[in-house]
Length: 127
Image (cartoon, rainbow, N blue to C red; front, side, top):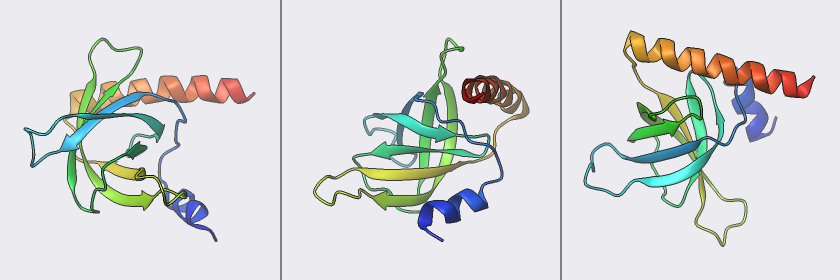
């Protein structure tokens, strides 16, 4: 079983492969500049994106995701679960897998509604 297959088998939520804009920075460095990237995939449980910064598993990030259907970005806290080096070792690009941490109920409902909407659009595109 390759690494990708291993992670797919551990997922509890369906993933959306959609290029939403994500901004992030370490929670303990709120003076740090926000880094921006495009999400590779996202679910109710977390997301995967690329970064030029190497983060350590267990590190907590502040995360803002801009969904086209919302006027303001959704804000989260997430724990880095994996930080993968780029296949091409010459570049300093890392794949970052983040698990979302506790959300209040109102935010969770809005997020679930948004994810469900884009998941249905993605599934219709495959059919």
